[in-house]
Image (cartoon, rainbow, N blue to C red; front, top):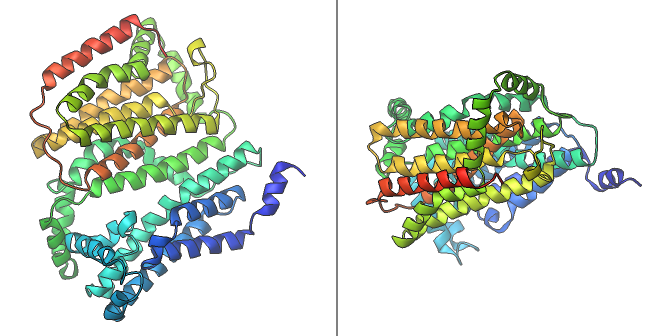
Length: 465
């Protein structure tokens, strides 16, 4: 029996898979039970089977949405109607710290705790129960439950579904793509603006944040929880939004790439455009930026700053930086090996290397994106906007250099940028879990000059890698 047929015969039927996704989403969201069940692993596995069988994505996301809403709803009802009994029963009777952690989270974020808690693993199954015990108005809970589940369902289903379609792709099964995923591609156009402009605007003193706050304060039902949340500090809305959009868009875009035979039509058109713009000057500039963005170039850029963090004993910042670069490097290695997409051209130093996603692009996004976030935190709020635009200006030529030298398709760059944004968002969310000391004083002039000297030596003396 062919391998594809054998695997297909072992998988559950499509209706059963959809039902399993609903049950897993419900159980993971259910009070306390979700702490004991590896819901992410289970739902990724079920979504992968669905992608392999080409089950309609809308059905899958709908099942996850319904399960999540029901799970949180049941948890809220238990806390609302059986407050005293719940605290006396296992496992809360043995782990009162779970309830304390959820109560502190709820007191800090108010109504938004239900929305934000959906995406925070340690408190996700606790918050709806706590919201019921704290007597949150049912109408308010329903609003937060539905809106958070609408974002949670695709964010959790799409990666597993992507894995299943990749599996299908490598087994040479008939390709196809859900039409709904094409909508995600439209988000790519505005992701750079969201990262550079939206992060500032979604902070406490941003215009968008203030506009939302002003609107909520006019609604009696939402005014008190919003004010309570605002007084306790900034909510990482920007990082959460970035993670959800980038992860969903990355999954959708990758599905589009791997289910298309050869380069996309967009790739061919942009390749022709860059061929027409080709000259000795542009090729030289492309090679310079390509060397800046490779492994040796990135090391040359960050080495002085890493040494300063080490000497000044800023361990948390150093570990977050190391984690971000290690994570994006591993994800690029895994992605290239998994998708095996051929390059438009493969010079000698890239023989054996694949195209998707673009490691240069993802690493540049992590480098300049995280730098912008850390620098912005030390600057006056009215000037933070420009920090992100500078980061965007530095990232673009690093990415576009791959098209100039002809070793990537445009869709590789988009995938790399989205991957970098996912890593940025995850790193910032972990960093923002607790207050951090200021990075000042920082000898940034000396460090910048040192980085410039090292990167000049790398470009002038060493070959590309």
